[in-house]
Image 1 (cartoon, rainbow, N blue to C red):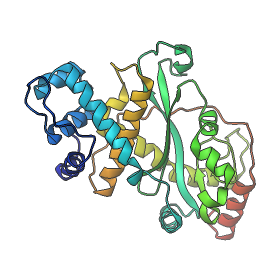
Image 2 (image 1 turned 180 degrees about the vertical axis):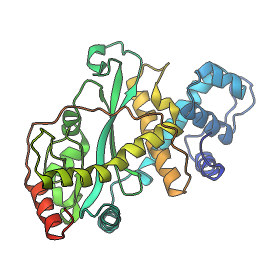
Image 3 (image 1 turned 90 degrees about the horizontal axis):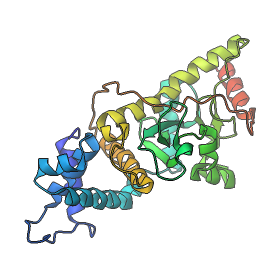
Image 4 (image 1 turned 180 degrees about the horizontal axis):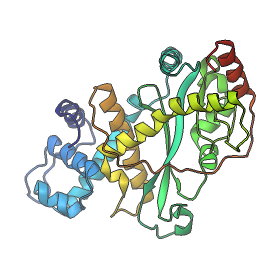
Length: 314
């Protein structure tokens, strides 16, 4: 199942105690236990088998398999806020300290990136889901902390959208602009690649146009070594939950989005319980957009460079 048995056991116990679990028999067939429902869901997320194949594997029909996966996913979404959440002030301080120990860059609360989730061509507006890599997808925007845990995710925008536009449509962007100090404590910020704008709370590297100064090149090197953590998080999650590589049967975008969010929640639960997995290099389909040229404010980046120069880091 690509999860440690202890992690699966926790899920079974929580699900069995929930109102979402339905233990009633269906058409006289034996009851499906909470353990079996969780295992069906985890198998679905960890593999690319069809509903029918999974049903045959677990001795249930295709429709029951589908219903179990939908039911468990809805349950996970309801408890997700306990495992996937923005850090409070004390947690943010700890995160920035760990990031600084690892990267020598002060003030990082998280790293942001986007990745593609491959889907079948939707029935409506399918051209907007056709991305630059010439396949259909939805975008997943993720922010991870120093432990590769997701602290913010936004999923479901069509794959053709630029990362900067996905950001502008996200709840993260809205909250940051409504009250930045309440969200980014102590002048903390995110690191993002050149697809993102330079903001008071988001610092991208310099775009390499061939005339970067020595300081700018050094800054980019430090920036890259720190930002790679979000790419690793996406890769680890897609290694563990291979369903994210392609949703080959579903066409309901909302259902797919819920399943992607569930994968992020499960990923965090695994991190919390030290449930590790080897990275099998499944590849992260990063958005790899061109540099953003919109709503740029480079003040925060320059402040950071000045501080790093003062500390003799650059």
